[in-house]
Length: 399
Image 1 (cartoon, rainbow, N blue to C red):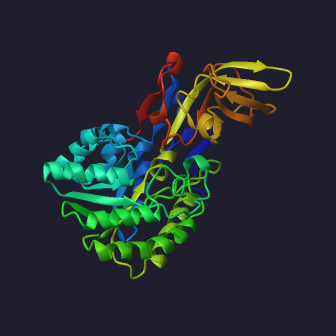
Image 2 (image 1 turned 90 degrees about the horizontal axis):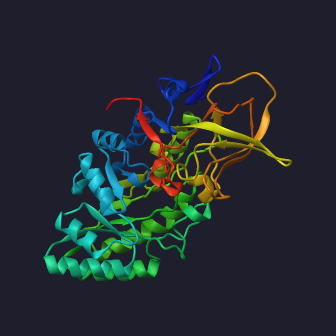
Image 3 (image 1 turned 180 degrees about the vertical axis):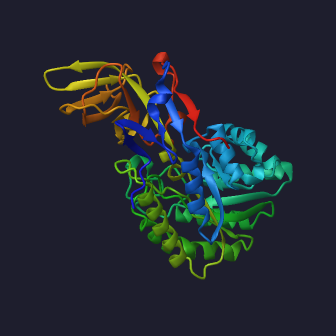
């Protein structure tokens, strides 16, 4: 069964679980518009939470920190995974407390660490031995116990883009095995430090879920080794990173990919007792957003034709940063011979390219297109370079 979120009806592009006509959202157009469907996110949270062994799902809010999305996560009993105090404060605006929060990230400052330790945060995921020593000093100064996770790199190739693979030996993220063992030993000797979790995160946009089997093969014995020194260890943080196919926006295929991972977890974790955590971002929110853009200029050259739109790398960084693919669809289909375009933005950089060699039915200046699957790592990565207007964000569903 196919479950597409974008479909044409009467030659007009519609979007969402309860389809809406996207051309309605470009009336009186002044700037690019991102339309979000919260029901898409609701479904995906429910898929993950149906895994019977799950302790708690923590939303990796770096993917999208729109307040209504965070409020939905809170409403559905998710925690959050954050990488800065700025994200913590945003989560608090949405109703989360520090006991709902896992604090990750490689460059936590003394001020950030002291603030969250004073507030009894649920878990700090430690990513270096130097960070652990900082935490120990702050805990001693405050005479407070601290709940810690150690992020260990399983040294497994996540089979994803090298810029978003995070668990290899040369990664800036996490601890290698030997550094992790030193950290466990230090924690075991300090009554103020409590090792509550072992964590791993293989990377982002993982399409082959079998890589988790390889990771668990090395992480399970490592967990038991750590628990022998730190008996308070009871959480196993399985990270996240499950991806979507940006070239095939079929929600049923996404659901099947998650089910493959859940089945793998059930098989590989059989008889292995722990409180299981997941930190998932992209998979929950990417499909929920579509970015509407106006064609400003159609420029023909001897070698190619450029479709210059008012959305650029300042609105959607991923294509320029990773060469990432996003489907682009006209809001209205018209009859005529298709033409091939390079779709580019207005920013004064040669890398401001959204897509190359795409075929569309005939388009004119001031027509509109939809850039798909921008709910993750879209607006959160925006900048004001060239002082272009930011995209307006519209929510389809009330909380």
